[in-house]
Image 1 (tube, rainbow, N blue to C red):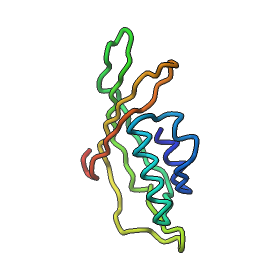
Image 2 (cartoon, one colour):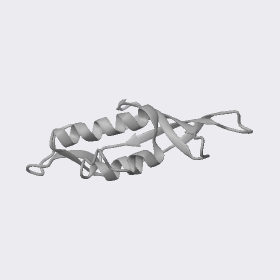
Image 3 (spheres, one colour):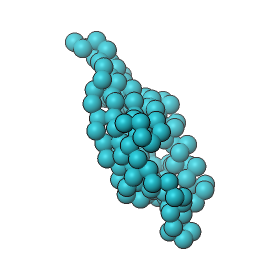
Image 4 (cartoon, helix red, strand yellow):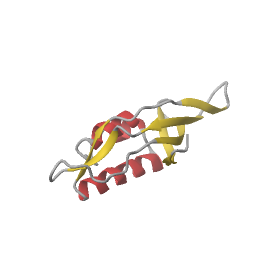
Length: 124
């Protein structure tokens, strides 16, 4: 899901079909809203964050249907730029963010992120 979000952010393509390949529910809604806001405000995102995901819990280990993933992502090299002039959108340097994500098994057997929370910089 994050790779899809990073790719869409390079053009702020809030309608890309890739959004729904790995996200559903509130995760998909939040991703779409964020991309639309950047599009509306004339922003794109360049670079790429780093990830350190780890499974923190599994519901029904013998037949799981929900997994919680904890991540520490560094977005200091994944910044927003103004499309009008290519300049940085702000002087916020980014940092390491705690992320908690819920991944659920879908009816077709695939797994999709259904919700996530990104905490402020410096939380991990």
